[in-house]
Image (tube, rainbow, N blue to C red; front, side, top):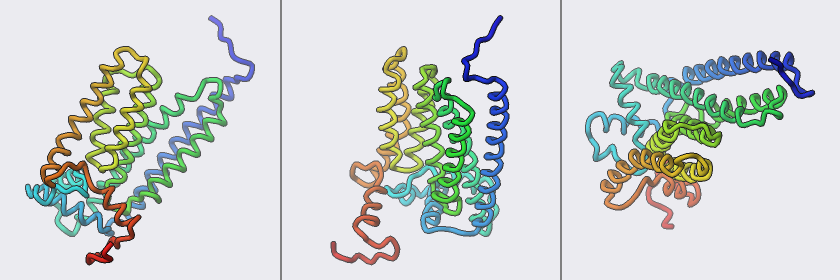
Length: 285
């Protein structure tokens, strides 16, 4: 048996680079976990306005008050998780805020795992001839810093919102699409993609648009695969099975068709300039 390497390939240096890449990845995970834990701990008794609403929604769902729980501004998945989480521990009102921040930290860890899943798919897409140690290390440094900034500063664990949950589903969806683009995806990956996109919508309304776009990309990425139409239809069916029932419930509750009004309200606040807090009905426009 013989091995043939290209003139530019040095197996010894590549092996050493692999060791450093593994060390870099382990170091990043340790830093990400420590920084996330510090942020969650220092903000354990803080609460934002949206967080109060999500806590109220969780209470409404837990008590069966669906008339107030189902609304077009606040998506249901995060309140469901909070309700189950608080029901499991039952440590009293004083520890309610710290418990929610602990839940956020766990979601953050899941988001970190989803990010690593996505990043692994990106690294596998690099052509073999371009997969040099410098390119891999440079890409990892950019990716790791971007994750830390987006998760600990742009999103932040100090806020009680479903944003970290949305990040988790976005990373998983992107990683699944990359795997499908490789051409080695099994039926289970299509099923998983449909489920991830549906759960993402339940986490936050705008994810519905993201999900439709991902399904559109799936048509292009999987068009030359065996039984592509059947697999795509399966992903769409799973996505619809999760999203459509909630759209139906929400539309019935509001007596009009809607899949969520968070986009409309954000335009009112951010574009039209209506005050976010203590609004009393003016100005007339």
